[in-house]
Length: 606
Ligand code: CAO
Image 1: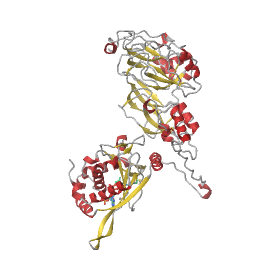
Image 2: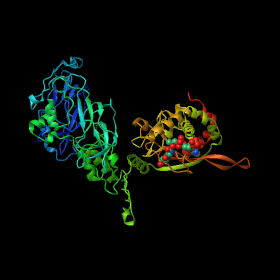
Image 3: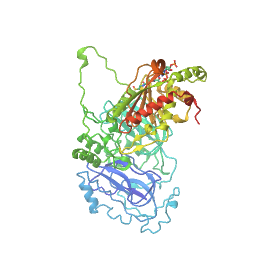
Image 4: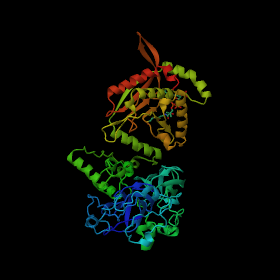
């Protein structure tokens, strides 16, 4: 059967803001299929019957009207009637028209009583297996009359095949053009889901993700980090996860022409065709991107976080109007989507005093430097901008304390120097950092709280059974933190080798996403440069970071006399919500002891 848009009351040409199913999904009656959004309300279109989704005919950003096809469904053999849209969500004022109609039963949908997989059809047992047989049109149930049957009828009944390819283009960017690609989040061959972020664009005011228009496989990328793009530019080719065997399967979508023209060329029964039929330019518009976020001076909105939040344009607008930083609101919708109700509850909690208001940071004075002499304004580098935002987020969110200590590494340095030349012959640079990392891996096994993270609810601790350790690397482009996987399973030589390899990749800007993810603890070593003690900033959501400074010979009082010892300054910053001062000093004391146990550090790791 084909499931189409039910009676929308006074609404037409309504945007699809979420597609909640994909080809192959088994769904139950009343499961939401898509979410539609008018300028006044959002509403879910529920499944009329149980079954397996064949073809998904729409994508996020498409605009649809009553009767337009949404999906094909291999039903389980029940009778069904066309669905009503769920009443617009209560919070969305002004939606009474559509909701009223739906409730009054003016739509074809009022009676969903028989829309129950094992219902009146009685032959539910015939069902899934046969219904899924490739190419078979198993409409055991009679579909409700679509508004435009000829146009909406599918060419084939959703036979699975290798999907068709389509070009993904940059959506409408509002007033922005020539925007920088700061992150490409997928690689060729990756499987993506509808709406999954494909790449991140950055204007001078906001970052925004370009979502996948549908589920599929990335065939080829047309842009790379650093490129500049505008609305409509081709960014990648996507092979749909599933297509029909009939004429409805689109080929590679040519970039020329409007979406409506392209759809017409392809013979697609997609919404663009309706646009052509209706002469509606609006219906053919590419998905609208969120209006660029503007950061007023002094406001506490984290724009990068705001842009990443899963929320509809109207909810974003509401958050802006109320001055709410969406990144701080917990989403109660599917996949954590933030609803208007969530935003309002958040504001209510603050008003009731149940949640402390996060005061805007006082603005720093704006100075016209040119008044005092010549100046040269240079843009911050990409990495600096990204790491700057992250460091700032850690700094303002985490109550930091730093515990300082010193480790006597006289014996360790002596041994390291004796092993250095031999290691170099094997292409390994055996620096003190490799030993510090080995010691930290041992400490994290002993005191696992130092590699935990606070749960999202702020009321639980997440303990990780892996020990991936990050290290801050100074590169020409700024600070990056490569991550050494399973550092606890590597001996000093393997750690030194990983340090060398990842540092080189970091300096040449060739780290992959995988190389900088999953860390549980970070080490920031400035020892190669100089300095004595500092206060590193915790790399959230981690809870601790070890700062290492330059070792120095010092007089240490021992057995009644001062003796020269090589001392390594250690600075452990930690999240005081998770780690107490006693824990921290236990960590640094044990770490210092362990750095004195050279043989233990050099032991082979099983
Ligand atoms: N005390 C004295 N000397 C030290 C030392 C220490 N704690 N740590 C390293 N050294 C020495 C090394 O032994 C090496 O000397 P030799 O060549 O004579 O052996 C020299 O300093 C340079 O070491 P390195 O920098 O090549 O290697 P590393 O393993 O110590 O560090 C890396 C690698 C990537 C961490 C480092 O190069 C780096 O980028 N450090 C900066 C990190 C940073 O910016 N942190 C701040 C983050 S917050 O802004």
